[in-house]
Image (tube, rainbow, N blue to C red; front, side):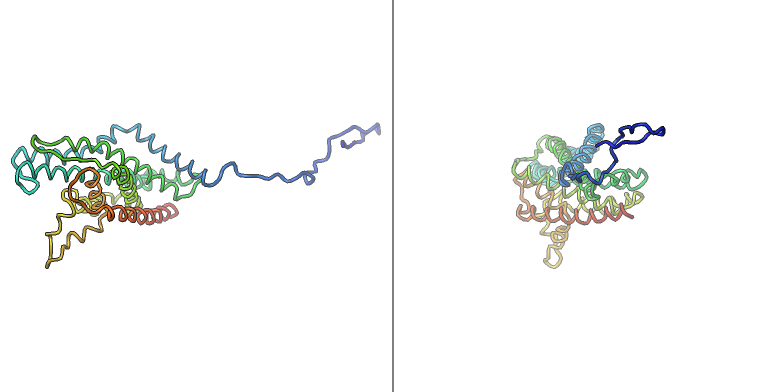
Length: 308
């Protein structure tokens, strides 16, 4: 009911507005418009999509960076060496050279996924933690810190899959006459192992990118990436390392088992060839273990760097 107010001259009261008594109003229940899971999923997709948009704008640069090293490896080992009579694959003519080509093509695809994971995650994080400070804008978004790191790993894994798709056909055709890589695609291995390998290598990139300062990137490549590459079974299958022994113990074949790239390359040989390779019931569990360990350590380092 309206209240009445009395005028200054004593005339009849004038109806006025009701008093503002908000305590009499019933409480209004406020419910979030979407769940935390839905919001986190939307934020993760937005972060990954942003990286993919940047990749699309610089796809030519990405493709050139991805192809150069595998192309040169195949060109030198599979085209130049046979042409100049430089024996590869243990000698023995075109048959052994073709066997080496079969081993090398799978290894080239494996190191392409590794280098792409490091390039897309480790190098970018080193820049964003360094002079660009771009990481500060991302971690200030209304989402958990781990989500930002997870988005980096996922976008790096997607780029690794694209790199594998680009490199495989190029590596398969760059060879001298008489040298041929005998490829047989095992699709269930291809469709499961490549994404798993790319996630493992991107998670490794997360560790490296959060462990090395921008000024020490050269040190990272010289003391970490280079040994991983040469001891990762790129140019030889793991099964052929048994003759390297000390006192009958295959020390090199045992030592390289700590290298995640050896499992990636052995898996690639199982996916693309019929060449001897490590058993898949070893490759898959170990790669999953590396993914979990690398992600856990990488997320810890990422949080430490962000909050420091």
